[in-house]
Length: 116
Image (cartoon, rainbow, N blue to C red):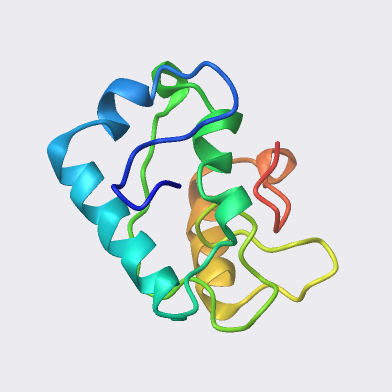
């Protein structure tokens, strides 16, 4: 990410127009400033837009908002609340999966990586 908060995405994405909004650019610039100051920000820079690249905007059906989805180093993989398969799922993700299980058949349950 550039310090001005400009968007850098590797693939063509229909999220670009949303991510170029003034509000989003302001947040991205703030995060870039925090990184420059040495503040640890998750996920790693290379994974910041992973979720947007994995899922086109027109396929989004649900957005889950939360605070502090990554309690430990090495858990952030670019999808909020998702963790690598080698990592134990944090309580926040377990709570989300528990709620999903109430409404969807077991065979539709995602992995802790939130990949389908």
